[in-house]
Image 1 (tube, rainbow, N blue to C red):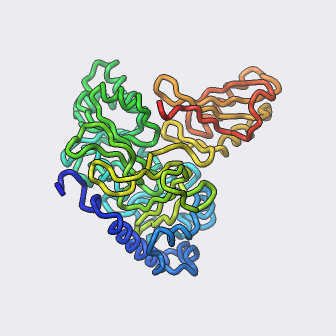
Image 2: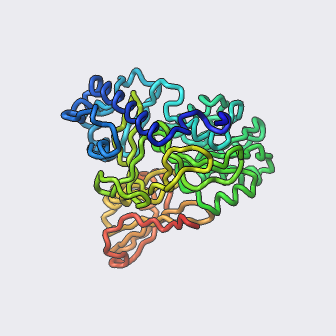
Image 3: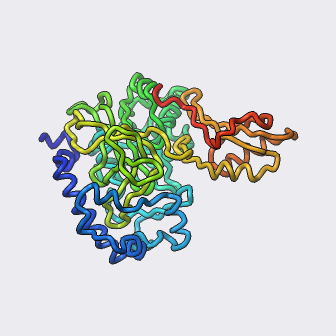
Length: 422
């Protein structure tokens, strides 16, 4: 193998070598966690870890759902007894919507993002303009740590203050953008509007939202080769795109390659049972993290396993990427919006009989509109509901007041109308 083509030799292991190595690591991690973390001692009671030697054995263990994790953390703060270090021994502590609290351990690339950056053509000595949020949530820190572990300098830009960001880009000339797919367009458009040169950015690794084919094509025409990765606040990197060998700015190859630091299963939604290869199901991830080993975390995301290996030479299983949600939770502008949040908005306004949040695309951006059935429409009601929507969901959205009975009686609270194939 040409070492320059891949981040490390783990990426080209045989399937048998990978499974044996990952499960051996998992057994060691869980054995230590059972001894150090009271939450794991309870969860693994009666489990024979030595018998955890194939995918079938792993699939028999119960799932950990995010809602359950939030409840467990509330009952046993801060981390439900599922970490092998105390809060004071961590590098950073985070708060994500849910609420769910996470920690970053001391390892330099805790979220394992360097692997995805390398596949996206990022190399030591590059300057990375990182537009993932650094405030409370871990996204910015996960990408920042991966870039620095790879030997890159990072501009910790975050989100907002676009004019100041454009000045920094024009002066410091980063070659790489990291952030949500939508925000890259915001920066490129703002640079054009201000007449500033932002053409130094020729590669991007995006996450936290859908990268639509048209959007990727438009970025390519503007000189930016974009790949995407799939990650979560709790698990870090789960899967990533790649290119043909030796082509650091070429087209993305089909599918997403699962990270070497996780075990990914696709299960039938509502169960922990693996589906047949090629069948769409819920993504379940197990991390090989000795500090915070997540065991069969049900992400709520839908995907499917793809047959065969990638043409880039990496041999890990591939998934089709994000294909929607197993529940009605959806992601808007990189933020999850939950049915419970819609219910919270409704509860603030006695005039609302029923509501449905519609998520659409307009001008290459996510747009959400809360359609509300109301008996009457007093002056200023729509504006007050919009204020509640922004406060609860931390996102701006429109409000549409409709007559009672206008919305379909199908139990749907969030209606994602975006076309992910366009």
